[in-house]
Amino acid sequence: ACAALLDALSGSPFSEALAEHRPLHIVGAAACLLEVANLNDVLGAMAQGGEMGATSAQKRGEPYMRDSIFMAYLDHATLTLAGAERFFPALLDLCGKLGERAFDYVSARLVLEPPGSVGASLVADADLLAIQLRGERRLTLAQPIAGLPVSAPRPKALLVAAAQAGDV
Image 1: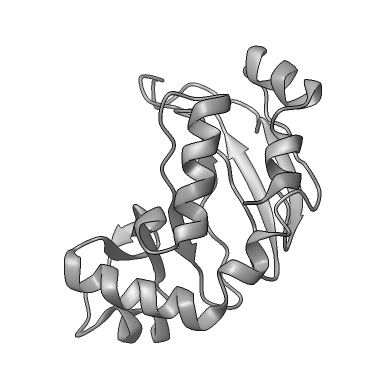
Image 2: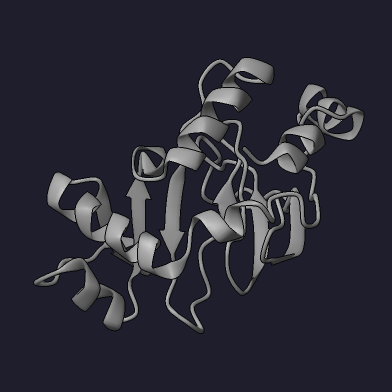
């Protein structure tokens, strides 16, 4: 399952970045997941997750409720599926192998943003692998601001990158 991704995450650039707690953008390393998570499967998993309470909708950073998650998406809300590995066997296998190689435990969260959406910055409050499955997104990884006084200057972004399909 995703040998190229596992190899990229086992190499010295990744190991060094992990040891130094700094972000790393790896172009095309997750191309193997593009076939596994096609749009129909993603939508099916989102619907199943909605029935189980694993799918949520957010708009402008706030929870967004509609009759269904798809109505929320049509109203330009971002959908998030927690524990996405439960819905994609290949992703479950990948999470398990990553757990064996580099981390104690690996879980997946799938985020579906409507076209034209400008998603919020990812916050580096834990180890994080962001994998772009479709399209292109400007990815900003920010430092946590919890505990900073409101008047304090905001820290610079740790990483700003244009993520293409298959990038980690």
